[in-house]
Every structure is written in C-alpha cells, then in structure tokens.
Length: 437
Figure (cartoon, rainbow, N blue to C red):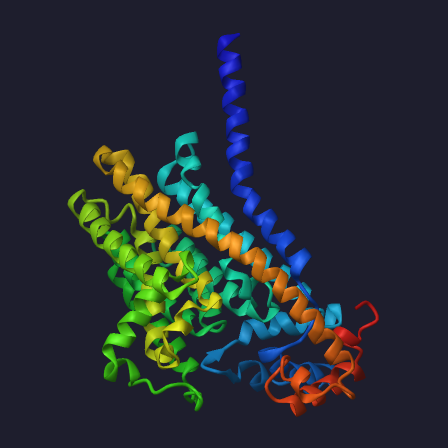
C-alpha cells in the first residue's frame, strides 16, 4: 500500500512538472488569441505583389528566392504564400504557424535534453526554465508579427540540424536530414548561415572517431550553400557600413554584449550587465567542462551557445551602426535565447557530477527566472498596446482612400505604397478586405 501511494505521488508530481513545462506554450497561444491582429504592415508589404503574382499565375522561382534586406527568405515565402492563399491572407494564421514551429522546437530540445541527461523527476524538473525561455513574451515582436515566421523557421532548422547530426553516426539518412535542415535554416533568415560552422563544431566536439569525412562533406555542402546564398547578393544601401564595428570598437563591443543579455532584459543598462554576467558564466562553464572532460557530453549545448554568440557577432557587424538600442530588438531574442538555453542545460546538469557548483547554478537560475518574469510582465503590457495600435491600423487600411498620410505611415513609411498595396488586397478580397475579417 505504501509503495503504491509513493508511486501514485510520483506520477502526480511528474504530471505537474510536465504541465508546468507545457504551460508557457499554452500562454503563447493565448497571447496570440488576445493580442494578434489581422493586418498587413511594414515588411509584409513586400509580399503583396508576390501574392498577386500567385493569383494571376506569374509567380517565378526568382520571386521566391529574391533577397529581402540581407535575407533570402525562400522557405518562409512559400509558407506565407500558402497561408495567404488558404486564409485570404489572414496574418493571425501566420502567428499561429510560428507558434507551431516554436512548439516543435520545444519538443525537439526536450528530447535532446532527456537523451543526454535522462528523464528522472530531478532532471525533467530542471528543464522547466527552458520551456519558459522558448515562449518568453520578451519576443512579443516575433509572436505578434506573422512575417517573423522566418526567424522561427530558421531557429527550428538549426535545432533540427543539430538533432539530426547527433543521431548520425556516419553518412546516413540522418546526415542527409541534417543537411536539408541546414539549408532550410539558411534560406529562412541570414543567421541560418551559421548552421554550417556550428555543425562543424558539433561534429568535432561530439566525436572522437570517424569525424574527418563528415567534416569534409559538411564543409563542402556548406560552401555550396553559402555560394548560392550570396549569388547576386547586395548589401542593403540603407544599412550601416560593415566597417563601423572596426572603426567604433567600443560601441560595437557594447552592442554585442547588450545583445547577448537582451533575452533577459529590455533596457540597455540591464541588458549590458546581464550580458557581462553571461559571458562570465560561459567562461567559467567552459573551464568546468574541460577540466571534468565533459565536452563531448555537452557538445550540442555548446553548439547552441556558439550559434547564439556567432549570431550576436554578425548582428554587431551588420547592425551596430544603428546604435546600441537596436541590439535590444525583440525580434533577435528568439535566436539569442538559444545561447541561454544551451548554457543553462550545461550548468544545470553539471550539478549531477560536481556538487560544489550548486551555488553557481543557483545564481544563474535566479538571473534567468528574474529575466523571464520581467519579460512576461512587460510582454503583456506591450501586447495590449500593440493590439490597440494595430486595430487603428486596420481602420486606416480599410479606409485607405480617405485616410491621411500620417495614419497610413503607421502601416508603412511610404503612404503611397500602402495605398497601392491596399488596392491589391481589396481587389482579391484579402486581409482586412476579406469576407471573414
């Protein structure tokens, strides 16, 4: 009887832990439901002419592959065009699709985590912060903007790449899957290019034998992918000089560190402090895993951290000229959060092998919990403000013929372009002009 009660309590506790892990995804769904607004704005304007080509049958591969800013969003365009056709271009449907991508990412990271560290109550309980990081409302810009499918797809592609490489022991089906996922990540968002050097790092760190041929083949495919990506690629003229970071090293360094800390803070001073703390945590963790010979065991999480740091670095090279404030952009949080997830996974599980670092783990956990709590709190406030602002945009777009330039410029800085796009949307009864809006 006592054994039976203990087993019952264990099962109930496990269900409670799993519910707490699932809860942030439910909250993410509700966040879209309450604050998501069906409105085409800003960069989404660029998709409208392509949607028209889809309707008239003149869509080409070049339209899908064309550069947008510094990105090649080939796969996101296909998804957004499909959703536009099926839903009469309801952008809330895009938000829910991004949510599905985030759920899949959570499931994959959970499987990777339990594969490495087991599925005991103790281990799974420690996974809870990871789930809350993945759906943190600090990413409000990505959550409430369907256009950001590109970032969620690129992140999922990267996670799938490492997931597949981890299961590949040679040149097999898993290795092919990893290559395909790397390609999806690359042609979804610029940062996806980093899946290739990150993949090389993972292969080297995770294997002691048979890695040479895999590295060679991965590198060859990576070079081919990069070559295709940069074919006829041009730097956006309105972006800062790529030499800004070199000529303004102090500002660029501040941008980089602030971006590293941005998932856990929305103000530059706090993000800078947290970024410095994270860099210290990373340095100490590297020393610990090297000394304890746990590099191979933590290789995928090291790769997460590496991918995140490389992302912050290329953002610094390309965007630091916009000012440090730009490094706090909510849209980057989905990418840089991977570094915090990877670092947390390593530290959380080092406590199993080294009882002396529990204080170290406790401090890091407190930093994460405070940052995530602030992110959710701020996200709700911003979500409500965003909802009100976009409802006003809806009214302006519906009445585009009589709306003044000031109102239309909230949708896009080019008021005349908004009017032209509105004509197309109205012609095909899409978005705010659809019957179901």
